[in-house]
Length: 246
Image (cartoon, rainbow, N blue to C red; front, side):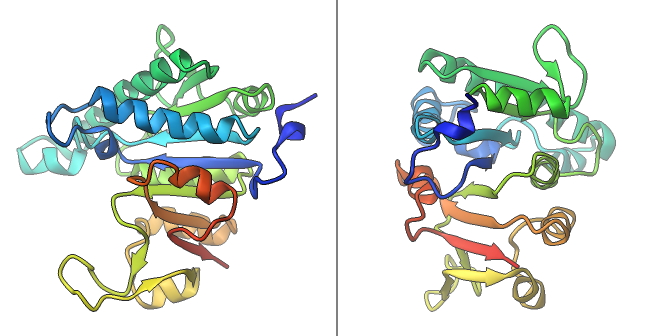
């Protein structure tokens, strides 16, 4: 019996792509690129939905270690900087894998850049088989190409894997009509269409990622990861964050 047949009745989605920025792993007080307590909290949230029988893919960024665009400002060539950023995502992915395995969650890391000693290559059918066997699959090294963000990776993998939704975990509790940090009167949206988000030029994802989601009808839920049960709430359909859909 496949894992998808054991999905808890409360779960609204069977297969999800969880998009995490590298910054969510950074320690607030310690300033460490990967804070142990923060890593534990994130992995416990992943385990919480995995225990519901949901098939979970994770796409992790590398901004807590190195970001290609920031490297360009320091004189690093953009292409080289992007590859450096991709390698940073591998470090984060391995950290997630290690902690998830210690929590009893079988996990596989698949890399878009071949590095056989530490990760499997990305192979679509193998990734789907891992999910069917109840394993969490972590996608690292972005798309394997410079000039593409990990948002685009999430949109691409969600389209390829026929995921029900992209769960985009951020430090903001949804999408607003303007920056809530600068404007106290900013209004939060509960739901948005892709077209409205485009018309209002709302920064949901970068344009390439957003176009992929629009074209392939992959909804995006943007929510705040600081709530320690946020991902579970999203999975069971509680009102959380902002849902962008066709």
